[in-house]
Image 1 (cartoon, rainbow, N blue to C red):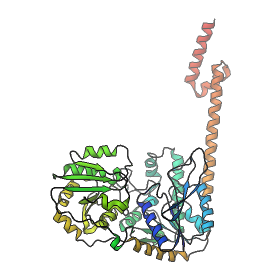
Image 2 (tube, rainbow, N blue to C red; image 1 turned 120 degrees about the horizontal axis):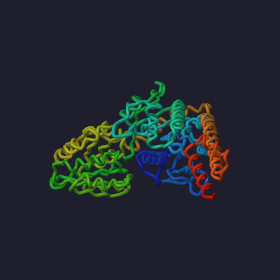
Image 3 (cartoon, rainbow, N blue to C red; image 1 turned 180 degrees about the horizontal axis):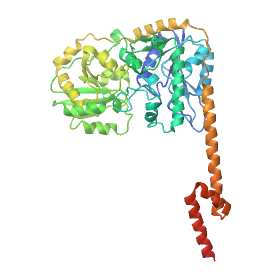
Image 4 (cartoon, rainbow, N blue to C red; image 1 turned 180 degrees about the vertical axis):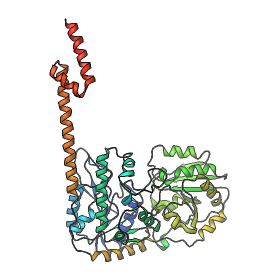
Length: 487
């Protein structure tokens, strides 16, 4: 079987949770004897006006086609990219996958399932965030969950905070985004999510018909090896030192500032904070040190997940107090794999999956987290946590389950031509270009009138007074002074 996996980014350029999941799945599929290719986007754009194109790469034996956009206009809300879709259509025809497994539309385009369907290639999607209900991915414009359906109001004011275009342009982009999501979801043969909490939240805020929700399956991801390949850290029976670790890409959305505040509040003498991962917000490390008060705080920087057992050898507990409604949490998987008890927030999948392996605290509540840290500092309590049978899904098991879904989906090879939404986008672009041309033409005419008025043309000065009376008056006053001085 030939599989094409599509994702918004991929190692080595970026290695977040989604990228790591696709990395693990693609390499395991390859090991299982399937033919696999990954098509990915990129945050980088082509330099020196070079045209957009696929860059051919290979990662851990998996062939990768990385799309780099050309510079210029990029629509943050409506991710449609006609150049990518043309190149993707050619790639589909050349590679001829049995199934397209889509992991995100962002940084690629919004018509991928439609393009595959035209060539008789069935598709399924694994959703890793809330993008089909929120153009900002996480439904978190602030620290509080947005509980409103996607619509012009309230989405346009929210989106204008991050994409500064006029309301009419943003409204059209939002409408086209919604039309694309509707079409893509209707063409998918199946959808998977990693947790029930993720599906519940999508259903709560999604504006889709029941036929879409019937396609969903809850299929917990597995990215950790099975059996003896798992590395387990020994429980530390000590009371003179308590080391707490947080890892992953470091940003405030993951609750790291709440953790630092809680550490400062906790009634513990020997508490140390350890942070691993690339810091993606300027100044965040300095803020964490300041918020933690006199606690020992260290930063390990970017890391290889395969080295976590060594990097966390002296750690007693993992803490992930995310403000986001996490859809899975690979770092929680890693903590459980290493035999570490956890403290997580009550938002999203970690609270659902951790079970008795740790403590669950209200999100964004440093006092509650400080109390949890005090409780977890007791080696006896940590031992009790580790007696829980809360288990991990292995990478091997997850891959086998995915292969079963691929086999089901692959039989649906009937081609279908979905409506081409590009025409609507093109008509809008032409209208906007006409408006811009009219504006530029008007500005050019006004500039010419202004220049003639300054040179003393009475007709031009009179015309200028109709649309810029204050400027016309100043020019008239200047000309009067010059005539007086000249006489």
